[in-house]
Length: 172
Image (cartoon, rainbow, N blue to C red; front, side, top):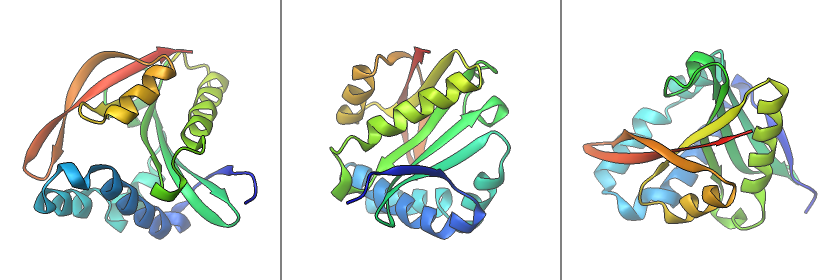
């Protein structure tokens, strides 16, 4: 397979973004959540009109990582008012990093993180932050390996289930 490359999405990518969003979210969280809550969340969070709006929102950017014409994963970054928490103009948020199940453990998440760090530095950001589900141990270990430290938490609602995301950050 060819070397993976990262490219920014446009509204023309909305349907493919929807497909990989649903696939990777289910892969990551379906086993720990009810079918009803998963369906409710996927329907509200990943419908085409909502994703199209997100793709056009100032301060939000989506990226695919691709190789050999295949989408392997995606990344969503937010700055300024697009951030899901008020973290200020010096911050960049990683809202989503998802890799297809068949592509995990190939260094793609690390490639996304390096990309986000470089982008943040090029835009004079001094910190990068993200939210991770309190029970997602592999993701928490991954971010800790990259020197992210927990600093707070916020609620994440999955259908009727109120869950907790740990907020983690690191200086650039």
